[in-house]
Length: 507
Ligand code: NAD
Image: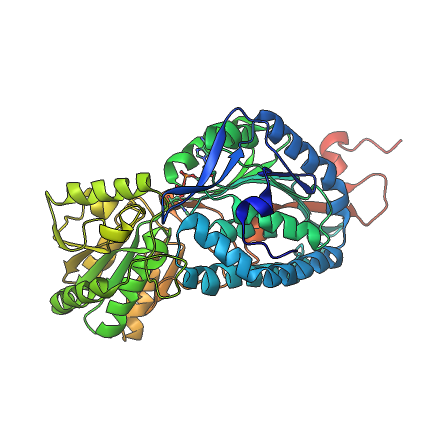
C-alpha cells in the first residue's frame, strides 16, 4: 500500500468499504472527522444510509460460502500476510490514529499499532487451531463428534477510543473462524478501520469478507444490527447503547457479544510498593486520556499509605506534559472532542459539592485553548455512592478513597454496576490470591494495571457486558458448536425404538 499522509488524498470521498472497494456513501448527511487537538475538520464524508448497509450486508452474505469453505490453512495465510501489510503501514496507521483521536503519538506507535499487528499474527495461528472437542461413544451404539462452524454475517459496532484495535478485535476472530463481517466504526474515527479493510484486501482477503459502513448509530448502526441477514452482533461501546443494541438483536434472536463500559478499581494494600503503586495509578488513569474502558478510575488505599499515595499521585499528575499529540514529547493529548471534554468537566464541577479537587479540574488555556484538553484531575473525599465513584467518566480523572480492613477494600472495589477490570497491589502472595478471587471483573492485575496480550481474553461482568475479545476464547462468540451423532450399528430396529413400537416385531 502506498504511503500517504494526506487524509483527503488517501480516502478521496469514500468512507464506505463494500465488496472489496472503497465507495462513497448514499446517506442523507455529511459528517466531519475533527482533529481534537485543533478543533478543525480534517475530512468530510457522506455517511452510510440504509442502502449502503444493505449493500455491505449483501456483499458479506455473498462472500460467506466461499470464505467458510476455505481451509484453516488458507485463512491463516491471508491473516499472516495482513500482519505484514499492517507492519509495513505502521507509521501511516499511527499518524492517522493520532490525528483522528488526539492520542499521543507514542501511544499510537508503541501500543495501538504493534498491538494490532500482533493480534493479526495471533489469529493467523489461531485460525489453524479451531477444533471441536471429543469424538467418542457416549452411547455404546453411536459415535459423537463436535464440529465448530462459523455463524454467517457478523454485524459489529465499535467505539472511538481505540479505533484500529477495536476494528482488529472485531474483525480478526470473526474472519479467522470463517465468518464474514460488516463493521461500523465510530463516525468520529473511521479512518484506520478503512485502512485496515483495504490492507486486508491487499493481503489477499476475498472481496466482501470484510466491509465497513461509516455513519452514525441511528443512521447506520441500527439498520446493521437489525438487518435480517446479520446473524450476530458484536458491540463495544457504552452500556446505554449496549442496552439498545440488545433490544434490536432480540427481535431477530441474534447472538450477541457486548463489551461495555468500565469503572476499574485500583486496590492498594498497606504492604504494597508505594512508588510502583503511585506510578501505576497515574499511568493507568491517564492512558489514552483516561478514555480506556479498563483505566484506573477509583483507587482504594489502605489507611497507612493513604496520605503518601495522594501526595505522590498529585505530584506526578502535575508533571504530565499536555500538548500536541503528534509531538513525541507529549504525555497527554486532547480528549476525543470538545463536547466530551465538557461532559468530563461537568462531572468534576458537580463533584466539588462533595469532594476535594486536589489537582487539575480545569481545561488548560493559552496555546491549547482550541483543543479538547483537560488537566489530569485527582479527587479525594468523594463518597462511595457519589457520581464520581459510581459512574464512568471516561477522562483523566482519578478518585482516591481510604479503607481499613482488607475485606472492606475489596468489597468497595466491587461495589459499582461495572465489572470489566481491577487491580490489587501487594507484596503478600496470600492477599494477592484473595484479591484475585474477590474482585468482580473480567481481568484482575496484580501489581500492574492496563497491559493486555493477544493470547488472553478481554471482556467483562455485570454491566460491563459478556463475551470475550482476543484469545482462543473469542472463538466461543464467533462459532457455533454442532453435535454430530452417527449410528455405528447399522441395524434397522434400534433398542430405543421400543419406546415407540413396544414389543411388536419388526416388519
Ligand atoms: P458509544 O456507545 O456512544 O458508541 C459506540 C458505537 O455505537 C459508535 O460506533 C456509535 O456510533 C454506535 N451507536 C451509537 N448509538 C447507536 C445505536 N442506537 N445503534 C447502533 N449503534 C449505535 O460509545 P463511545 O462513546 O464511542 O465509546 C466509549 C464507550 O465505549 C465507553 O463506555 C467505554 O467504556 C466503552 N468501551 C468498552 C470497551 C470494552 O472492551 N468493554 C472497550 C472500549 C470502549
